[in-house]
Length: 112
Length: 110
Image (tube, rainbow over all chains, first blue to last red; front, side, top):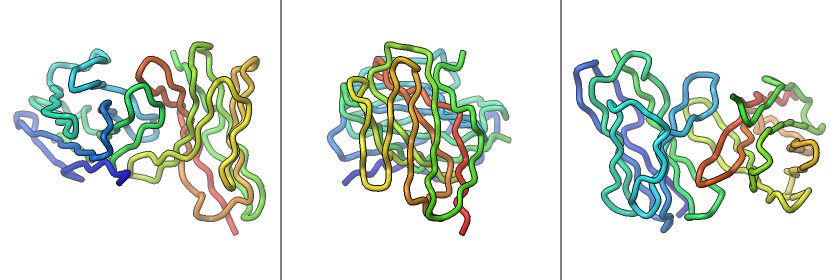
């Protein structure tokens, strides 16, 4: 099983809403990532979790709040987002110290 | 500051011929390089990688070449197929994170 599963696939939310993006992998990977990708741009790293601890936070606004409940799950809690936060949000996982990251299909987020 | 660059935003190649996608980087501390293929509204799919201690890695139709002195890598696809049409990202690995290039859209026509 080389799959990273993200839910939901699409999400439309208002600027006052609270929502969560979910990511799951069963490859035994201990590193998990959130990336954000805007149209015609490369994926940009937001957060890295290693062994369920946040190891990299790329100065992301506090309206994005990651959570890693266990080694297989990664959530991204969203609150008071802005329209410019609309993007494709990608989850990925890898072996710790490994290089190949496996990506989920992404959640297409639209903030209205 | 873009540490990984793909200077060709698009490439068009005839089916059966070779596709060559290029990537340049600035940070000599990167120790691993990867190529990903991406379709619209989907996550990137890993294609092939190369360690900084090697200069070539081959997997089927895909070959990646690394020139460390020039800080340049390339992906060769031969023969190119219409199903290869997608956006290709190179990525460099360092300290627990991948840094992606800007992508090259490859179109393979019959």
